[in-house]
Length: 411
Ligand code: NAP
Ligand code: HSE
Image (tube, rainbow, N blue to C red; front, side, top):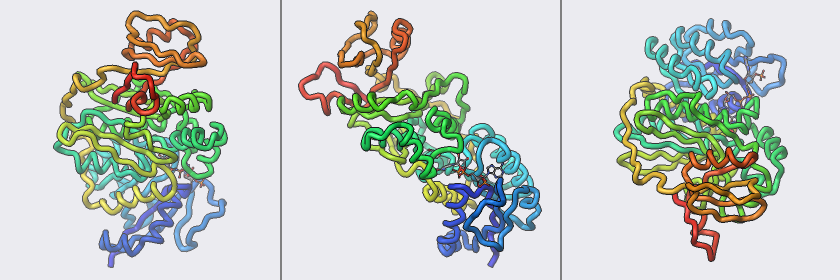
């Protein structure tokens, strides 16, 4: 029986997870692929590190040694940053190898070039692991939602941020301790500022929007905010209001142009993201036929990410090369969207004044809830230096705030 030869680039959390799962699931992979799967080489940065790895395979720091392996079939990449991963995968494709990557930073920047190059060389590119860990959102968008027009995608796309927010709320952990734990568990990026400042979720949004809308997000147009301003006090205050902070990336098309955001949002109990806790991710897709679908599951970590890469491996013969081809105009439904927007406003001790604010509910410690358009909120912030604001979605009022019916937030 022919052996499918694999080279693994990277043997950190993800690379080791892929290696161990290929060992533990060899029989199943053989059933699915009709071939025995063998990891023949591993590329790392530091060859001297102790690793639980077979002595029979090639362990190297030199990518040329990998390229020289005769009849190499697949290169699976799980290293960090745009380079050298991009160059390595280009060379692998030019050599005729299929490639599978978990590297969202590299893929958000260079995915299009890799897919075009792969098409020229009749090989496939798997990138399921670049977004939402083990949640099969890429295959869902690429293979299963071809007739639907996608109106909007919103997701909790960073496991580390969601984990930190959950730890702060449920266990009263400090931000720093929760981040440390996320690093220990292998959820956080090499540079964890990518997680907590929103960049990682932004890269994932770029990848999703390219598939769903066939267009590149205008990077300079998007305000990317992370969770670094969410204090334990804010988390507690939100909890008292029956709300939870979630870091949400969203994108939709308006008048042919993509509009996206990456920021912390306050979510009420009726929203599908309210109960997404810990390292879980969730992605909500609005299609014009199906309506709203939410996929959720583990968003980071060794085995969920390995699962996504191995499902790409299982799909290898079927992976289509249509990353660019799903560009259709998207219907927007202005009536159903955003009839009213509600916001939690913080750090404003004075009376909030603006003619376009319809309603103000003053809470405590300079916190209020207002009903206004986002542009108005931005204008208001110009008047109140130091003001922070968080959008509320998912109906906070009807759930926890007994007695008061003056404000009702909607999705
Ligand atoms: P990691 O634990 O830091 O491991 C990175 C691996 O890449 C290490 O084995 C390192 O070698 C190797 N490496 C780094 N730079 C290299 C270079 N220039 N040449 C050769 N090897 C190099 O990272 P990770 O968490 O596994 O993440 C890997 C990739 O998957 C990243 O792009 C990340 O964004 C993505 N990802 C991670 C997760 C997750 O849950 N962790 C989930 C989805 C996607 P040494 O071992 O010698 O240092
Ligand atoms: N650091 C990423 C996260 C890994 O926490 O979501 C998964 O992409």
